[in-house]
Image (tube, rainbow, N blue to C red; front, side):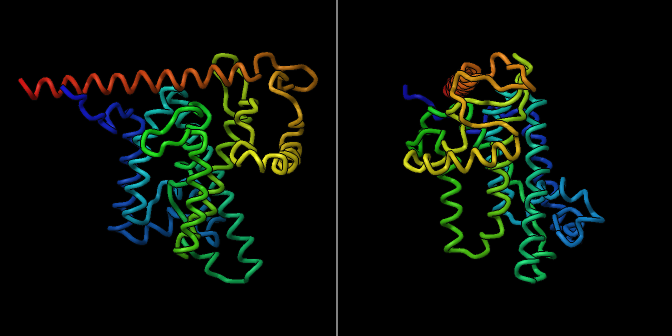
Length: 298
């Protein structure tokens, strides 16, 4: 008997289902009550009195295409990340990336207005979950970088870079797609910062992933890394106050004392847990599919 097809979205977590319901509900709301978009989406000119839209904008998908892609991506990628991170860390990641992405988009819109003096940058409703979705792709790069994607035949570590490159390419064909770029780029970068420096490790109570395999330059082809590394180290020292010149075995420091265990060993353990969780989930889904097939054949 042939192996039954793998159910793509079986085993989806309750948290992901709940967030999917939120995305769908908000989309239905703004379609029945269009004026709600003015209060939920990010409109830079109104953000000062309506500061809550820095949080709500990420959950507002204005198009059917957007809500479908975001919902399916959430359900599929979320069931891979949540078991590794835990539900609390998963929802914290979404909140932080969503909020800081909205802040970056707000600053970008204000800057574009002062540069061009075009008021559409101030009054265009900006929203969407795609910043968080790109953040999920960065998370996939972190936990299972060497896992080969079955349909694309590329390793997971290249998924964020390839998707970003594709997004830029689409902008040359569709002008409307350029409105998504600030959210996409900000979401990817903020998520990398969060995972690189801020994410708490429950096993060691330490933060971040200092491994060289997750350095900023790894998002680029290897021949560009000698150029990217010096630039990245400038921003690294600017925002974090420490140099990127350390090797894999050097620990992060807090003040003058080293933090033990914050080296590439912890990153390797995280990747092993991610790969193991993925394998266990895929095996469970195959068994469930086989059981259903057997029941149907009885």
